[in-house]
Structure formats: C-alpha cells, structure tokens
Image (tube, rainbow, N blue to C red; front, side, top):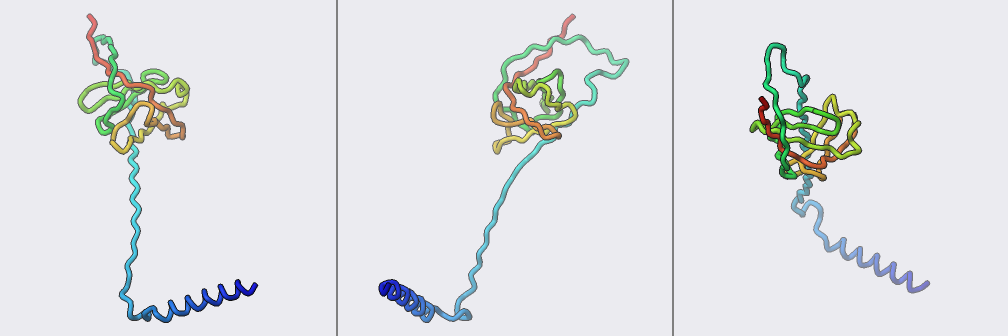
Amino acid sequence: MRGAKVDVLMHDLGLALLLMSAPAAGDMPPVAIAMQIVERRIIIRIPMRRSLRRPRGSAEPAVQWSESEASDCQPARQIARARFTRPGVVDFLMRDRRVIRARLDSDCVNLGYYSAFYLVPGEDGRICVERDLVQSRAGGQCAISNFHTLRATPTN
C-alpha cells in the first residue's frame, strides 16, 4: 500500500513540475486546428422513353437487331436515354448513337424498375458489370450481369 502512495505522490509532483515549466496561456501563439472531410457521390438519373412506339403516320422499316459482346464497363456520362424492352433487360441509348443492352441478374426480373431508376457509377465514372447497381426509386437494387452492343440490320 505504501508503494501506491509513493507512485501517486511522484505522479502529482511530476504534473506540478510540468505545469510550472509551461508558459502562460498569453505567452503562447495561437494554434489553428482544422479538419476537412470531403465525400463525393454521384447519382445519375436516366430519363426513360415514355413510349416505345413511333407516332402514327411515321412508318419505320422493319429492323433486325444483332447482339455482340461489349466491354464490361460503360462510361456513365455517355448514356442519353434508357428503355426497358423486356423484363430484366435495359437498353441504353448512348450519346454516340450506339445501343448498349444491359441484362440484369436473374433475380431482378420483377423488381418494378419500369417507372424510373438510378445508376451510381464507380469512382472511375463508369458503370461496370457485377460492380455497380441499378437502383429503383422504390429502393430495390439490381446488379448488371452483362453488356451487349446492338446493331440494327434492316430487313426487306
């Protein structure tokens, strides 16, 4: 017990000496402390086409679409419009007039993305397969399983 009292006394003595040797508060220059936290999150809302039909009186030639594999990542800023062509499939109309088809994971077929959806690209500004999600306004999420490029071939 006596050792504990000596330790406390030495601690108090050391603290007193430290405080006596410190300069007065008015003698010290002011110290500025700052912390800045920057978070960045970009959410892209893709406008949907209201109708997949052409206006009456504008005849469109029959078109056959062929698919070919596309890159696993697509630049998000190049997406101009989107449309659901069938359950689990979203066609992105790109600014350079390409059509990129995104197939959603099989468990996402009936999540109801038909009113609107959001894409949250990665830090690199791209939408990638198995990495980024399609998010519905209702709160559902879906991963993209693959991308294909669609090419139109007129049929006569």
